[in-house]
Image (cartoon, rainbow over all chains, first blue to last red; front, side, top):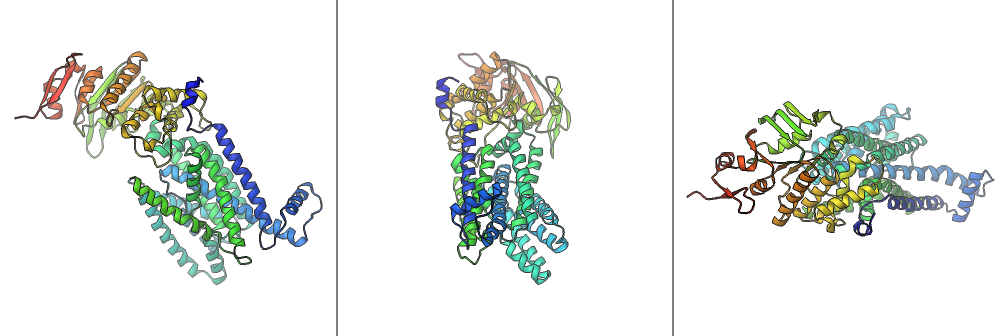
Length: 347
Length: 257
């Protein structure tokens, strides 16, 4: 490449820059996870935790007390893994919906997709509580149904606020349905359900965690193969079609993948809101809009954000715990309003 | 290169009614007609975005609808009015999306892709805003970036839907000069929908007059851009004389007294 060319070029994504960003976020996530493992109502010194982890890996005798061992590895570790999985799933789903719908306001929670998944999961708890796969499966089905409905309602004209409005209406309708369904259920289940609706990562079961991890791995792989096409869809479907994208195929693949991630995440951790809205937005501000980076970076940053929110939720009023979804909504709702107002002023 | 054979297109009414038109390598064909004549529909049918109700659209003798999208995007590039993008994409990233059909779905842009995109931006006199956000550009500047993206596709046929709308007069002339250079020197073909009839008269090798979904006439500007035909096409009185330099038709409007 001649020098005059390199002088002008810039402002686009190179493999090196993408790798660097992913590496930095990855390291931050690992450090964050270790810190989250150490802090809580029972504090474990960070150095002792590292020694204990090393002992786990090498098979040496544990340096922690029996009680600490249970708290760190049986209680905190699965919860942290779930926070990471749910954060990654919802953020990637948000980034995917936004690119596909050309709408920065799109987010599984705002669109009502999380609500659909929640209703599906609740029906699974009520109808087939003993079948482990029923919950993520029904969650997925609910997410797909909600996606189809909101897409039909909001796609007609090209107004992002209208789609968001359709999502809000759908969400309210689904919440009412959920209230109705829970009112018909017996009391023990009711309590369980209302806690979990607010986004409660503490009651996660091991199967739920496995499904989320599987969905994140599948979803990340599929979305990465579509990331270039999503860059074009983000500009416009007509443009994407003319530039060589099989638009209807991409639309189906991405809708299903985002619904799968939302469905399993909500089934395991409840409807944790606004993660899919806030995270991709911040990522784009920091590294640009190219989905080849926005998708993996959102996965890592989203994992980090939900991990942070969950750590705050379980430590702020310790030993009492707050639902994780309440923390993310406190941050997310103002960001949503900001994006809505900003979107208005530029048109 | 592109051939339309008796193409009909019905929406709620008959939009195209038996269009037969061929566009050959090395020529610019301008498509003129009043609003609602079916120009955009014809363009849409040419790259497979719209399926004709009857008739055939062929590229190099092969049905356009039989191509995979990526195959077709390496052959036909479309330049349309750019809408608003709601994400922070730079002009350079925008032009690089033109390389989609040439590169693997997963990978990053190769040095060759970057070079092609940069050259396209230079060709359309848009290199100076490569790193600015697309949304921050004026509509005339955007138009040049959109054309650059089409050039980055390295297609053989350019379909241009009002490429000079919003461009200032200097860039209207330079954009069409560029399209002419590409068609004549590199043997590309171009189909241009335009309302700038004087630019069409100067730059087009052939002009197709479209009215109510039918071709009123098709031929060289000197043959078909007559007072009689243009008057019939636009249903208004137009004066036609010769351009003092080129001798091509020069069209002026006049208010009937």
